[in-house]
Image (tube, rainbow, N blue to C red; front, side):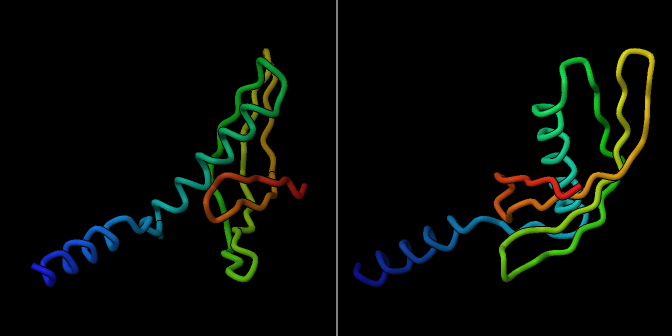
Length: 98
């Protein structure tokens, strides 16, 4: 009975670990996080589409250094540009660099 309880707790503990994203899933999550950040910080009426991201994981600081290609539209105007930012490993904190 004691072994069963130990194995059960070990399985439950291992199952609670957050899954680390990699590859396309990580890229999509970074783009989604930046799109949400821009939607909340830009003026109302501005629509933003994040086209792609180039990123570098900074493990010592627990963040990603990112460069996003974005397309912005406002009324009848549109533009494309590059937005640089850092995003925390848990995707809760975004800081624009440029």
